[in-house]
Image (tube, rainbow, N blue to C red; front, side):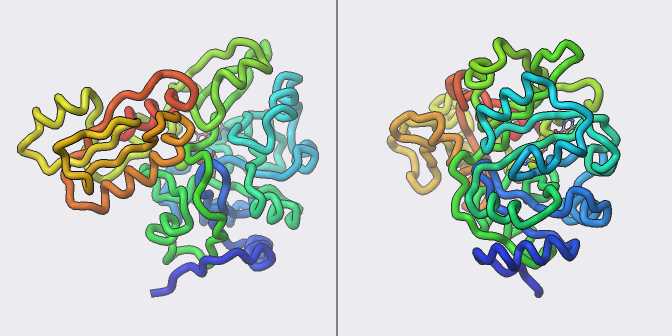
Length: 321
Ligand code: TXA
Ligand code: MG
């Protein structure tokens, strides 16, 4: 079977993208499945390879806001301030688009999601292109996002020619998505790798709306998403382990080690208790649980602060169904 080449050749990746093909790219959050964001054919191919419904819009990645500003109606002052403070970084901003961005990219929505990712290989790649890159997370629709080139190869390797290998993603959880209402008040639509506290430092208090009504079906906002194949439950780990003794259980904890529990079926995301570290390990842990011999994943609620909020959001979505 044909499978993607994995490497660090930026020129090769650039040539493939210029010819309308798809390439998986590393970012600091998760790996993306990239194609020319101005080319409907490339966008269609992204939806196809991911098996993603067309009502779920894509994020356009660039290395400089100036490169896409001609394709945008306006950039609110608060948006510009956020961009200046945190780009490149794990923050996606919704901005009113002009026709240059195909409606297919935004699922017909008037705004386009824009992000400058913070990864040296991908920034160099973007600097060689005169178009932005549409890049959803490089996983089949509904599954856990990939944080290594190997994760991408395992699932999409047969469908794309090249994976640009940038190592393990340092943040490991998708970008935070922020938009602005008619009064230029910031609204967070997806919790992610940028802490709410950091956004508020720039904009003042933000509201959070994880069930956007204008496009209620857009995943990330869909309940069952970011989900491993195995059933996952959240609660007091020790109690749940006892209550589920008839199951072959795997556990994922924040920092605590369970004694008298098979260490090969136990993943501690951050023994030192760092939420940033836990976030960077979360998706690899969920994938690992799918690989090993367990039939139930037990995990716990994380502290509701910093990246703990995004971790809890992902776990909740993974636990539905
Ligand atoms: O960290 C990330 O954001 C990664 C990396 C590759 O950059 N990308 C990513 O893309 O997570 P994806 O497609 O898996 O998630 C994008 C989500 C959509 O599911 C949707 O919820 C939201 O972004 N989105 C995109 N465009 C939007 C728009 N115009 N209005 C509202 N939400 C939008
Ligand atoms: Mg995704």
